Every structure is written in C-alpha cells, then in structure tokens.
Length: 271
Image (cartoon, rainbow, N blue to C red; front, side, top):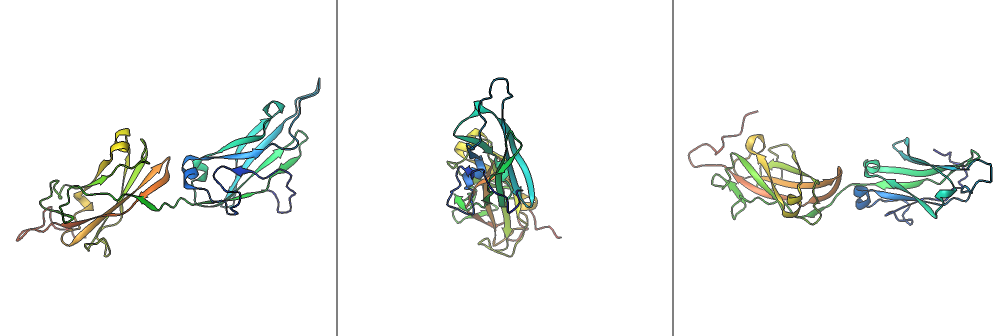
C-alpha cells in the first residue's frame, strides 16, 4: 500500500458501472454478479520503440486490491511499445468482489528505469443485499382457503410441494436456495415451530424457462405444524455463487387434524 504522503503520478483508474461522482464507489449488483472491467489510462512514460541495438523498454502494470487490511496483487503484465493504446482494460472478477464491505483498489507502474508510480486508491463499496422483487412461491396443493390438510392431493404426511414460477432473469445453471420455516400461527409470525431450513436446486434450461417445483419432506420439516399453524417459503437466486434476486414470501396454512383421531402424519415428535 502506498504511504499516505506518496506523490501520485499515475492517473486515477476507472471501473465500469461505478460512477466517478460517487466517493463511496458503490458497485451495482449487476457488476457484482457478472464482473466488471478496470480501465487504466495510457501513462505518460509509456515505452517507446527501442533504438537500434538497444533492448526493448517496458513497463510493468500491477493492480492491487485491499480489503480487511489485506493487500492482494490481482493483476500483473509487462507492456512494450507494441501494446500502445488509449487505455488498458483489466478484468475485475465476481470472486474478487464476493465479500461485502469496503475495499480499495489501485495500480502501480514500474518503469524501465525501476521507478514506481502508484495511482490514487479508489474506494469501493460492496453490498450484495438483494431486495425482494420476484413473485412469491406458490403451494399448488393448497385449497381455495390457502390450507394444506389431510385431503390435499399430495399427501401432507409425505411432503409439501412449492412452486417457483418462471422469471425472466432465470438462466440454466442458476442456483435456487429455498427457505422454509414453520410457525404456530396462521400468518407466518412467531412463535416458531421449526428452525429456518434451506433447500438448494440447480436449474436446468427447461426449469429456467418454465418454472419448477421444489419439495419439502414431511420429516422433520412439516411434522411440527398441526392445527392453526403455517409455513412460509421464499427463495434467492444465485449466479456464480453471487445472489442475483430474491422473492417475496409465500405463506400456506396447515391443518392436519382429524375428528376423533391423531393428526394425519402423526403428532409432533417430543423433544
């Protein structure tokens, strides 16, 4: 890291998608998901063609990433006169931006004479928080009153089916992480009957276009809900392990009671 009183000779870098007017350097979710490009302007002492009989001069470009007090070199390349162009693109991969928080990036030029020219550091703000924008999951076996019960088409003592409706953003190989939790109320509010469970699925090309169903097994995820209880489901879509979008929350009411008999599927297990 350059010392605070270092004289900066190299021009500031730019990053696609990050506004030069934003001092915090907020990186949009699209760039966090798909990666972006660092653009370094041509430097003043760019190598010139060698004179006859002399070695070819070169510059070394190094790019550094600083986060959580750790500095990492993420790029290094030698340039000669044949590489001359107005600017030099350097990829910034999603994996490099995977940790939320504040980061700093800068580059350093080493001239053919061994002098080091650092650029000013650019502050970046990384935040993968995804607000819910996708449609809520549905429960295709629920009745018109929104209940799963002992008469549901898919036996509740086997599983609960959760329908994920198709969305324009879906692509093959996206990962869907479904969250499910049971509550001792009809509206999905505490007290809780189960922990928050997560189920993962990688989408096929057909599922990305047509939607798909995920299944919640009865044991142990549904058994604790018996009467006047509910379950809620929501999901997040990941691409290359980066969260892309989140759904609103779907709710289903659960009634497993039977007059004069044990609940279908059996009573909750004692802990």
